[in-house]
Length: 209
Ligand code: ADP
Ligand code: 5GP
Image 1 (spheres, rainbow, N blue to C red):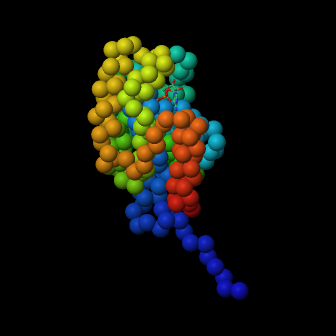
Image 2: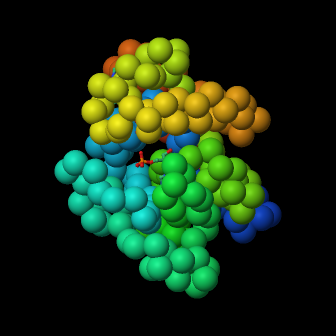
Image 3: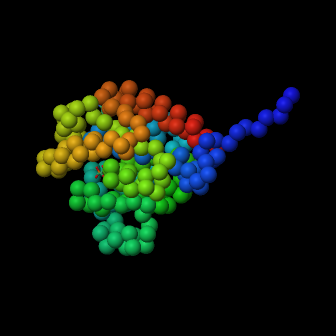
């Protein structure tokens, strides 16, 4: 019998050191209210190989949000100190508040053998892709702008003028098609849940080893 060595995964065989990290990064983008956190929550529930990147923000906690769970909530001086220290892989001002992805979220998750999921805005995804060009970028799109508006109102977390701002931003975000590697239209929730799991499984297999 011929001995056979299992080939190294595609990611590991790439020359670029960063390529290994990139292959384990799944950036999920889409306008506010399209269902990103709902779908990512589901993926985290059913795939224990995933770790969520927790962002740092200066926005105040909403509803039942807890510091250190949904976000690390900090004040503006603390955030600006972190910028000066070079703590962020990317950061942006979104709807008047700072949001940033700490380098440690990427490094620690990948070191521990987890795939890292990001829920960040389009400018953050673009900046992250500059450093990690092979990271996967998945757009969660609403079936229509009317449906998006209904979901934002139904969520009941934003004032009407904030919802108006989010809808205007949504139109320009959806136009940045060059950024997205894949798109899931979140119409029927169960279908979208199956699609995000299937997509993750396929990409994780591609990056294996
Ligand atoms: P995002 O994280 O993109 O801002 P959320 O996951 O908070 O969006 O979803 C916004 C609202 O829409 C929530 O109230 C959520 O329960 C609801 N929602 C998400 N997906 C669907 C869907 N396919 N059909 C109906 N409502 C949905
Ligand atoms: P929310 O206030 O609804 O939690 O988030 C508002 C927007 O900020 C969403 O589009 C979300 O994806 C984005 N966001 C959350 N964390 C980050 C981050 O670390 N960096 C960037 N650039 N955007 C983020």
